[in-house]
Amino acid sequence: MQPVADGMPNDVLIVEDDPIIALDFEDTILGFGVKTVRTAQSVAKALAMIAERPPDFALLDVSLVREKSFAIAERLDALKIPYAFVTGYGAEVRLPAAFANTPRLAKPYSTEALLALLNVSR
Image (cartoon, rainbow, N blue to C red; front, side, top):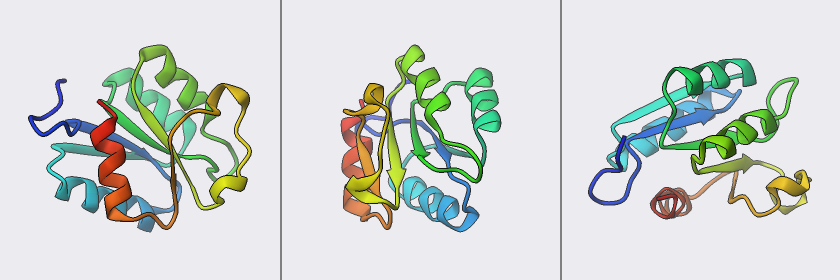
């Protein structure tokens, strides 16, 4: 898929284990004009969704219920799909060296920060 005219991705994958946060992200992103937003609550579900139809951009909660989202990030890197980590732990969160330069979005997030992240993803 190609990005829409204003630079927004057409299809965003949200990997978030908290359904309220996922819904908030979805509503906000759809409000930006993104055509499709899909959500997954686990690494396995996200990887299956990526295999079925790769997104244009992904937001990955670092810490899911009993797992980390790093396997998803590795798959997205292999496919050259832009993504960002989302975390409520701020700068203190320890990421593996391979992801040290990956964009991060702090929870709670500002609408402006999310919009900027999606605009520079292309």
